[in-house]
Amino acid sequence: MIAPRRFLPSIASLRALEALDRLGSATAVAEELNLTQSAVSRQLQTLETQLGVTLITRTRRQMTLTPAAVAYAADVRAALQKIAQAALKLQVKPEGGTVNLAILPTFGMRWLVPRLADFARLHPDITINMSTRLSPFNFASEPFDAAIHFGTPDWPGTDHMRLRTERVIAVCAPPLLEGVKINGPEDVGKLPLLHIETRPDAWAEWLSAYGVAGDPLTGTLYDQFSTITQAALHGLGVALLPDYLAEQDLATGRLVRAWGGPIEMQGAYYLVWPKSHAHDPAVTRFRDWLATQSEDEDPLPR
Image (cartoon, rainbow, N blue to C red):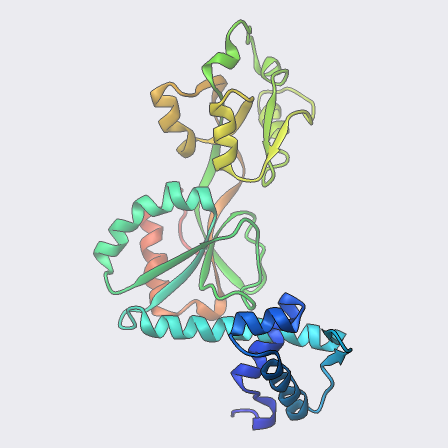
C-alpha cells in the first residue's frame, strides 16, 4: 500500500531540502538546481506546509535546517540515490539486469577487472557498475547490490563468499638494500617501513610469523596500495604487498624481496551481498561466475 499523498512530497521539494543540508546556503542550492533563490524558498515552504513541520530556521540572510530536518534530509538523500539508481538500471541493459558493485580500488583493478572480460563473454546481457569504497558501509543507505570486502565479513543482514586469502611479500626498491646486510627478518624491521591504513598490524604479524617479537611503529602511513607501491618503487622504504600486486614489479626487477617469501595473513577478500538481494538474477549469476574465479578451496557461500 502506498502512503497517503501528504507523506509523499514532490521530488523538487526534496531535492531543495537535500541540497540545502549539503551546501549550507540558498544561493548555492539555487545555483546547483538552476533555480532562483525565491523558487528554492517556495519549494521549501511547500514542503513544510505539506508535512506540517517546521524544517527551516530563517533569518534575514540565512536559512538553516532544524535538527529534525537534518535527520530527515539524510533519509531523503538515501531515497533519492535509490530512485536515481533504479532509473539507471532501467536504462542500462534492462534485459539482463545490473549489478552495482562496491570494490576495493587496488584489488578491484588488479584482480577483478582483468577477469571481467570472461564474465562479459558469458553474460553479455548483464551490466556491472563499479564504485570504489575503502571501508564497510550501510547497504541500506548506498545503492549497491554487492561489495568486495577485506577482513571479516561481519556486516549485519548479509551473506558472503570468500574469494581468496591474502599472502604478502616484504619488498623494496633494489637501491634501498645497497650496502645493507640483511641476515634475517629482524634486520628488515630496522629499515624504513611503509604502513597501510587498512592493515595496521601487518608488520607485527609479518615479524611474528618469523618468530620475531615487537610492534614496529616507525615509518610512513599510506591509505591505498597504489600509493604505497609507488613509495616502495621510489625507494622510500619496505612495503608488505599482496603477492598478486607485487609479482609484476618483482618479475621486472623494479622491486626485490627484502627477506623471505609470501606470508599468509589474517583476513581474506570476500564478496558480500545483502540477504534481500540473494535471489536477484543478475547478482546470482555474477556470484556463481565469481565462485569459479576463487583461488580458495571453499568458495561456496556460507
